[in-house]
Image 1 (cartoon, helix red, strand yellow):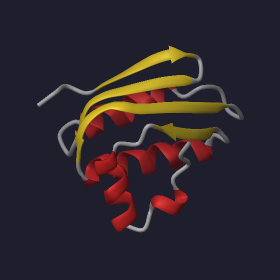
Image 2: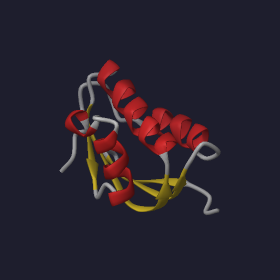
Image 3: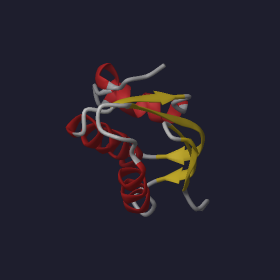
Image 4: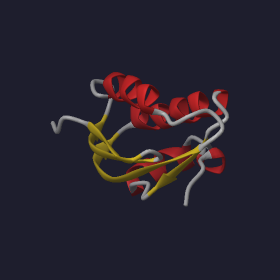
Length: 100
């Protein structure tokens, strides 16, 4: 298992690497919430470094999205892995995902 990591590339850009699963999601949830930019801004999350995921990974993105909306932050996901895209499509959540 690859330890997950969020790298802050600049004030509004983040990169996620590693596995998104039931064991790793809690750490990533808190890490992103603590790093979200100022209210009323935007944030971009690059998911190209995600090597494996399950439905917990999708739940993580939905919760990040919810937390961002509470703070009036426009959150955009980039390079959504095909595995995550398939889970979102099957779950009928793809239409609500802010993708590039």
